[in-house]
Length: 94
Image (cartoon, rainbow, N blue to C red; front, side, top):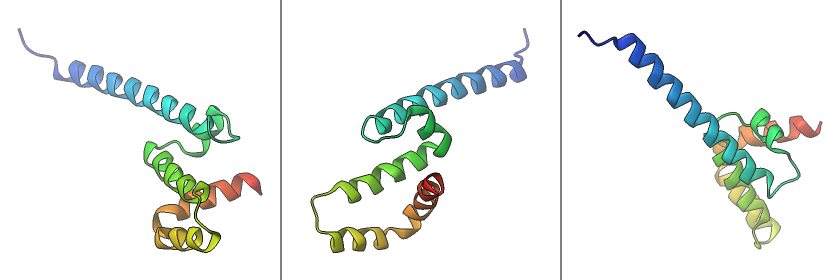
C-alpha cells in the first residue's frame, strides 16, 4: 500500500494549525488578564506568538519597580524588539 504523503502532509499541517491557534488563545488570555485589553484585542493586535512575547517583555519593564529613567534606558536598550509593539499599541490608542 502506497503512502499518501499529500494527505499526511495536509493532516499534519491541520494539527499544527489547531495547536498554534490554541496556544495563541492561551497567550492572549494570559496577557489580557494583566491588561485592559480583551483576548480578542490581543489576538488582533499581536497575531504572532513572538509579538506577544515581546509585549510581555515590554510590560515587565513598564511595570517594574525601577525608576522612570531606568525604565526608559531598558526600553532604549531593547528598542529593536519593542518598536513594533510600541507602534501597535500607540496605533490602537490614536
